Amino acid sequence: MTTPSFGVPYAPPHPGAPYPATGAWNTSQSAGHRQFHTFAIDRPFSLDGGAALRDVTIAFETWGTLNADASNAVLVCHAWTGDSHVAGPAGEGHPTPGWWEGVIGPGGFIDTNELFVVCANVLGGCQGSTGPASPHPVDGKPYGLRFPVITIRDMVRAQVHLADHLGVRRWRSVIGGSMGGMQALEWAVTYPERVASVVPIATCIESSAQQIAWGAIGRRALQMDPAWNGGAYYDAAPDEGPWRGLAVARMIAQVTFRTDNAFNERFGRDLSEANIHDDGLHFFDRFEVERYLDHHGDKLVRRFDANSYLFIGKAMDLHDVGRSRGGATNAMKRITAPVLTIGIDSDILYPAYQQQTLHGLVSGKDPRTRYVEISSPEGHDAFLIDSHAVGREITSFLSQV
Image 1 (cartoon, rainbow, N blue to C red):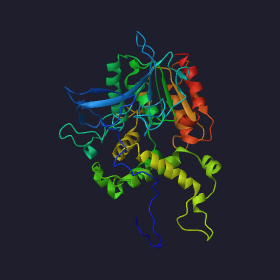
Image 2: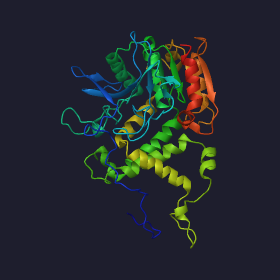
Image 3: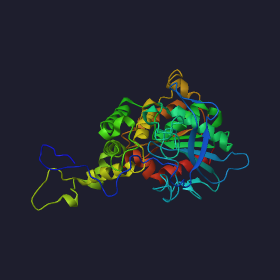
């Protein structure tokens, strides 16, 4: 607890149970529905930035049954703080329900009665895949900042190893929103022969300066937390890890995920009931919107790793399909599959013009390629919140490919 110059004791809100040093999953916990594939045992896995990893594990989950010729496999790629648990209830090993619950399942928009659905935790993640919280093969201690810089291409190349392990030579579709859409595009550009269709949602062909700026602010907030300790916090006692910095980083991001209208309609200028006093206003009284942001910061701290947040965020900033390929226009020419591009009219983080630009570079190649813009007040998170509107478009598209 600190005492600011106002003379009033203050500490960031801390609801209930102590925060772990990291919210990363580890092998002492239940695997839940996770499965694991390990590769790069005999030879290193070379990375985009020049480094290499050994003994790489990818955690994944599956739904449905792979048919005899492996032609019904769909890869769903998660966003920044997602994981492999795209569908299914919360339970042992899975503290939260699936992040796209209602979209994937028997009779769902992505129907697992017909399709074999795979979702993998990305390389660099913290829910079973190799990342900064994983033990380094040399000394068994967490990588921390020894973990190398990774890119979206590295994530996709790791998924190629998983696809080979599963016997999938060609995905029926690769689908993803936000960072998941970046992965879908990289699949289509890097491995056009292995993708029969692509659905990038609320994403871009290259991260813009403003998107990079938002990411930089969040990273700075996290790194300024003294408990981050240069990335070496894994042996910290409960409540002694960098939970303050990670929570603030998440709060910053959460503002970009929604819209002014959404915040105003839900919270307005209401003060929290707990901060309404008979003796007037107090400096540290909080608005309802602040409580909302605190809630999202609290949730992330309990299920995510601070270093993974940094490394994955950097990978998103580095996203550029045209890098080392002669520019974006030239790179997008490599895509041969039909593309359903979905934008959101109220998205301030990945504005619709970015999806329109994407569509402009692939339109005309295949009559099934099209652009759809979802009308929603929810902003970037509409691809998760207005899942029925997005799901209907995906169902229609998959029926044609």
